[in-house]
Length: 430
Ligand SMILES: Cc1cc2nc3c(=O)[nH]c(=O)nc-3n(C[C@H](O)[C@H](O)[C@H](O)COP(=O)(O)OP(=O)(O)OC[C@H]3O[C@@H](n4cnc5c(N)ncnc54)[C@H](O)[C@@H]3O)c2cc1C
Image 1 (tube, protein in one colour):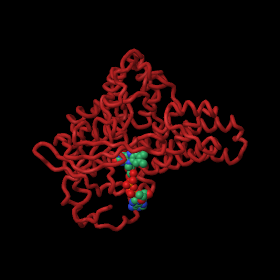
Image 2 (spheres, rainbow, N blue to C red):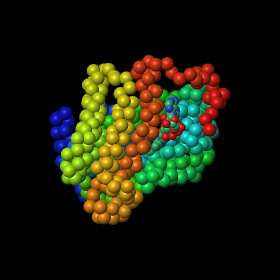
Image 3 (tube, protein in one colour):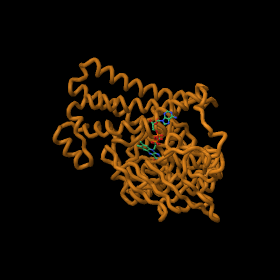
Image 4 (cartoon, helix red, strand yellow):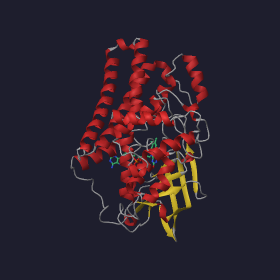
């Protein structure tokens, strides 16, 4: 590991320059393999284990450079395409992701297909060397700033439910894609409804083969669960990727920032680690640390974070030995949900009555900080309101438990007709 970090340090010494634009810096970082080092070497990575890749990301920030681009392209699309795409598709889609040129969103959930994702009804019909897509997606995080979408659509309604789905790379900048933001209780509009009306996708944007989309989507979901789960502590991106809201033409030196609490975004592990530090500091300052139950809750949060970190290390060791831990990503995701709930409850307890005040934008944040003298209040209320989301996105807590029950414990599946009737014949939600 130290050799790897020495190599990185030498590379940073030769390449980091705050006078570059964000685009120029990410071009260097992405094409060298340091932006997404967990990706394989043929997909602009270095083939590192997840923990080592996280250490690389942290080192880049610790050395005063700007972190790699973030977002769902890095978290989900790039690793999925690296697994299932052809080399030509990897070059076409992964390079613009790791260099921050393109931002991606995930077009999976639909109004009638969330937990039961394989029941999705968005249809793609072949038209020459293109597919024509019609349907509705919902809860599409970052859809309004995305250049590309990970689209799963039904390409054979007459096949069994899980067998007639295809995973496409869909261009979001086209007339057939209508994106409507949805406002959340945090005040932000993180996600969107996306209406696809005769949207077009070229046939060579099919990733992983026709009607094989369920297997490809499961790869995406596996990366989502392990990426969002407890145990990680990656550096949150300081600059935005993509052509819509990206910071690409700006001076990269203006985005250098110390690591610290980063609001509702960032990796789960990063939030958990910074929350424990922040709450301990707050409890000491206010004297609440004298209360035994506050100390217990702090220890519980710290313990959850440590158990998650150790699970990630154990998984790394098992993988290095050619083995796996069944259900590890699901356990990590469940653990993250619990960490978020604990953080919400402890944070709001420490904030006291001030926790009822919330800043809905940057200007309000400043006003709130000045009025209360509690600079972390906006972060705590943001986390308190956002804590409801992690137990839902990437598969709800109940769904994670179902998967663990069936795949790790070998319990029987819920009864259904999925293997005897085609999707077209099955009863539909809503
Ligand atoms: C902040 C946020 C961001 C998101 N971003 C995206 C995104 O970018 N792209 C995307 O495609 N989706 C996204 N989602 C959607 C998310 O994946 C779905 O909300 C989730 O899968 C649940 O689906 P649903 O909302 O349709 O709820 P439903 O599936 O209708 O579930 C409702 C309730 O029933 C329970 N339930 C359902 N089935 C079972 C079962 N078999 N056993 C036990 N309990 C069950 C659920 O656990 C839940 O409590 C996001 C969601 C959130 C909250």
